Image (cartoon, rainbow over the protein chains, first blue to last red):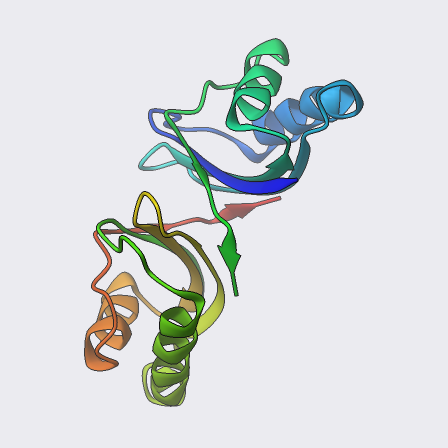
Length: 83
Length: 83
């Protein structure tokens, strides 16, 4: 499995509740896509959201975002180093 | 205290050892600047580094990076939402 950090821009005003619902919808696809959401951080003012995930590929992370009706990430980077 | 995510671009080929040394130097300033480094993720291939910190201000986070001789962050965002 690979660890990824994906970044969303333009989520201005995002709320904790919206993030919780998105994570709930994504969790329902975790089994099928093999993608596990570990943590989400967000700045409603700049509209920036960071998601730390583990999964088989960046495409699988992208698919879970899309299929769950969540925000599409603007960037997805593998982050093999983690300290 | 505020939680921040800062992003570095251009750290191509960064190594785990370099990150460990940077974090060590930053830890020595934590007391003085009140900034605590919680986690660092990095992608040596794209040169992208994400640092999760807690501190009194974005300026303090920036100062610790500069004073420790580490990589200057290109972006620093408060991330008040964390799930």
